[in-house]
Amino acid sequence: MEEKVRLSDIAEELGLSTAAVSYVLHGKTGMVSERTAARVRRALEERGYLPRAAEVLLAENPAKIVGVVIHDHEKYEAHILEDVFIASALNALGAETARRGLQMMVRTVKDLGEIVSFATMWNLEGLVLIGFCGADYKRLRERVRVPFAVYDACGVTAERVCAVNIDDRHGGFQVGEYFRLCGHERALCLSDNDTDMDLERWKGFRESFGSGAEFMMIPETRAERMAFYQEKLPEIRSFTAAFAVSDYYAVDLIHFLQSSGVDIPGEISVAGFDDTPLCGLVYPSLTSVRQDTGERARTALDALARLRAGKPVDPVVTLSTTLVVRASTRESA
Image: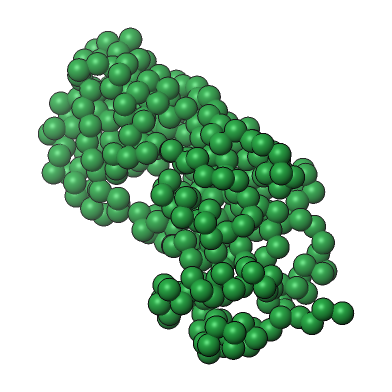
């Protein structure tokens, strides 16, 4: 009978303390150097180490596990799982994993090292990763053996990775075209960055709307954003339409403008992106670009199953988007 690998065995093999190995295993990588952390992760994977607690859980529950890892970016201000887009994605993934007889385990992380520890600790069927950039996925592929599917990954072509994207550019294009056909001559696009999917949404918006489209970079934190909007209010009121690259930012903008005495959509039409439940909770209800979260979950899990079986998958799958018009927009006066 093969003897179980102990944490102390790995520590002795690497010439480290058991505490140092434990730090890396549980994601406390700030306690050791990156070089040491990399050595420990490699040893943990090579020796197939699983903590005893994980072994017990796996023995008691033989169901296969899919890990869902979400980037806890500072812009969410420690409320990442309360974000409506994230909650909608998790809801769809939860329903789809249950339908397939799988278990879903959710983890929020701030850096890649925590994902490596998570994947090492549990015998996962695969990972679904949300909220990281393309460079992150490529580095992670070198350190994690299980297959993974990623949401919103521009330019990812790593081995055993499937990027499940949506047609961000066409989504932005639809908003710009709609505003133009409504007679608007000046329209604003708001985002907290000008890269990856947000850049594609802006490019599509500008392409269809034309020279009257302008881009405004907004702060990530809400307090700074409100102060920014107050300072920029005269400039914002010079536009008759605004496209925010997420429903959260669109609702945020509507609340600010209404509190400042601006009529929506009488003075400014506002549209968002993602068509989350927020759209029906704001007044007036929000025009938004819909993505099918159920289709995205099915596509991601299909890709993981094929990768797990050693079958080929398309490295990038792009799903369609549809503009849903509601009361927050209207024809220009």
